Length: 397
Image 1 (cartoon, rainbow, N blue to C red):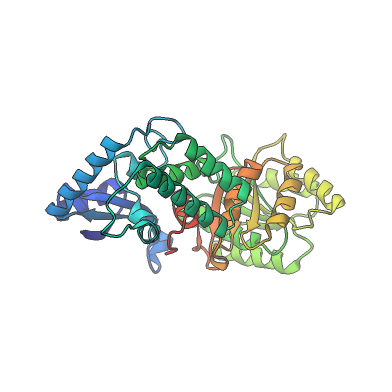
Image 2: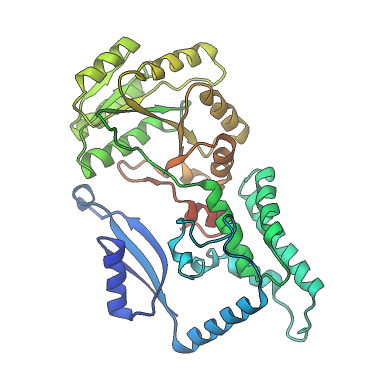
């Protein structure tokens, strides 16, 4: 099999380049956005990278025969809303019948090692197939728990899949159903959206030490440099001088307005002063989720803009924070306002289960994730497919 990567301005153009070189029978394995290198990354939008595969003729024929055999031995209904890959709009690659990218990377090799039978034992019966299915589902469950997915959520996913699995269901289909079920649970991530009438006020909330200020700088860079939007940076974090100075420095580099806000009245004045701008990003003070006084102050501050402009709230959480503390933080801010979730420090942990846990616990929409200190890099919109692969044992690139 030939596997090769191509880059272009968009997905359609890049796939056309691949077809011109390798022919029309290519299989698209992955599509992602990649940053340009050097100074070009500040001047131009990211490139689209497409990974394609081309099977040799003999291999392609063998694959087709295996797929026909699978369809003949499986009665699984791939048209049910939650088990189906088709029509969800979440995984274009699988909609066209393409296999999961490298069987979730190294997970397939683990499957082969766990379930490969000796050459002298060719007899299979219903009992053996049932045991194999149970063992495989247990393997997926263990992978989720190892990656710190809460046991109750891991059990829910496995139980839902076992309800639709039937005798002789191929492992590939079982894996695909678990994969898609988890993607559905993550939902469709959405980032900051423009206001109908400018400006859009965006509050960044969360405890100290999670990387709020750096995250704001990354997002501000994307909107200002790449999207050419008029933005303003404000900080209400008057407790930490270093945080205010850090944001002031970023504002100077981006050549955008900056202001320190000490009260609700000053916030209202700033919104009027910058009414012609597209976005006003506000860094709020981090505080203990157990401090009721600070909680009331935050509530008043955030809702003071409700009557004057459109706003969005983003709760910034670190993936390195203990699960119990994350629940407490999320519950506290839920009593203040509705929010979307940003997760930081993905590069500092090997387990991403808390992203799924908090998504299911809060019901909040996921937006961005960060994975380093580099500004404006090291941030991207949350990718459900990539995260699910890691939660099921795939390799981190």
